[in-house]
Image (spheres, rainbow, N blue to C red):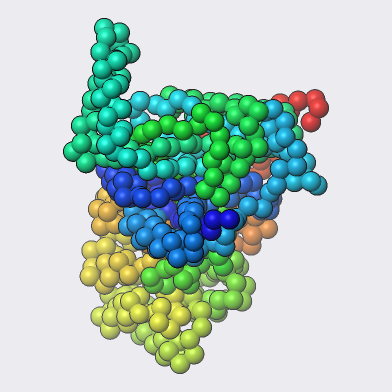
Length: 573
């Protein structure tokens, strides 16, 4: 059997807050990778249902991963192809993890029906496969990835096989000849054939043979029918057409598994590489560090967000949180500190009563009772001693400085903080600074140094001159700035190594009771359902009824309103 190589891919950008120019650049870069292919390639996007986090207001519904699959004649050829593919995809902005071992399939077909298959001998699970039959003539970058970015558990595979440009150019010339009629459809086809032929001759593009196959999973036939119809609707919105692979459901399921095989009849189309790249399956993206603290979900509510300041993928360990008053920056830091495992937490603040009393196993240093004129000296001593300890005994330590930027005007203290921000990763020390003094921070050299050296940046609600300055200094796209202006409490824009992810920060009821400092919540004992965000006053713990699995949620910008449509379940369920 031919050896198989599989790469797991992680997007380095987020389409939701990328500007049109960035999207077009990504599409063009992927098209160039496809033009250089000399062997078949399979790209897979898998979306599976997940469980857990039931105590959250809107628990994550899906886990996603993206794979690139290559087959070869022998192991030497496979190693060469995988090395070339890895370097090419990383040049596009897709980060690649270590190769997954051989065949990744875990499910097996136990029964075949005309319109679906049953998976596994002991599991009550059904799957239906569909084939993309009609392609849209004109599309926006990322059209197929956007169509699949809903909460449906859909697997999609794109099979790509390079073709001979000269042979395709001759076929296109023949097509121009027989379409030389007065019929409007023939004239349109003739123009497209002429343009494509010119691109091939000028080597601006290359032809590939492509098959796109979808597999939808469900618990029973009624749910499977609804999900198939939902997928067809989403694809139809892009002026495309996905149809059931009637009497070929076993081959359809095989085609969406990461094996590089597609034996479906009438599934293949010949396209140019630019058209194939325009699909851009790698969305929506999230931050999902292996040992990270679960801090919430992506803004669309589908995927979990886990954050680890010490993850190997990060270039540095530092972080910064910028927000307006009451936007939830301290809430976020307390949640992160509570959920990180195996990390020593050190917190410096200057509030009375202390803000971080609800964080267990954390060592706090409160400057509230220290005369203001002496606070900078006391802070310098504390940080200097900690820095020396970190150098002698490196282990994961998280140092939080909350609302202390005014004290960092001291030149020697500011230089020490800048040094920790730059090289703290060498001694396992992660420095996090939280402040609402955005303009003061970004107007100083030390503040810009801290911002530039932070691998993790958390932006909460911004507006006015501070927000405009932040958008300029952080080089945020118009879409990202629009999200921040309309963000509700508990909604953040997470910037991790230049990947922006809109996040809804979430806590359980018990966690919220322990860490909230909102007097309205402490007075009432619960979060008011009429507050200003989807999850209550902090966007975390509003009382939401347990709606059926297929409930559709529509979110409206920064208003924080959630409109839910209840889906009536059939009687047999």
